[in-house]
Image (tube, rainbow, N blue to C red; front, side, top):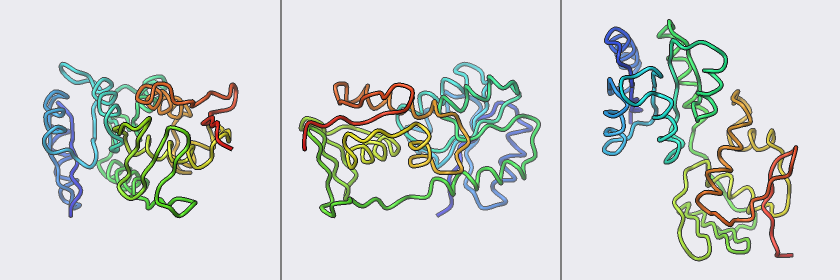
Length: 228
């Protein structure tokens, strides 16, 4: 099935060029001129990837990116005329997978889309103990249907939240550096800041508010367990 890409861009010329180029390569494309309309699409027919402008009428691209990241790890490529380093860092730290400055070549955008999709290939995760479930204290992870329970209650988690929780649960009391977590969760070709790790941990702590996911100062994180 063709991948569905949502292009959020208010410039008609860029809309037409990007849409025509992606459709020619076999993608299904929905063009939206505002983040508000994009959010309506997300709730009804979520795309497999967003190509997102930053300077939009109403809600800007940064805010939209942040809202999406609170719910999903769907790939986001940011396209923007804002070319300062701080703009790129902010876009990546809010959850963007790539940042492309205007003007850009449609061919380069296509190449980056394909690279990001390769990074997001579904992965088959298997438990080290072969039981199909991992339990540490009050945290239970079921691998077959990718469900997470904490203190007996099911928790809604994104793909990356699931993968990080599983990594910690299979290695209780082991400290992971931020760099190691970047490689294990995002892949070796991820070029964003390790602030992405801090942001993901923050989201997990917000959902599982008293989970003993501890900061190892100056290094990274570990999941503390009372079990032997």
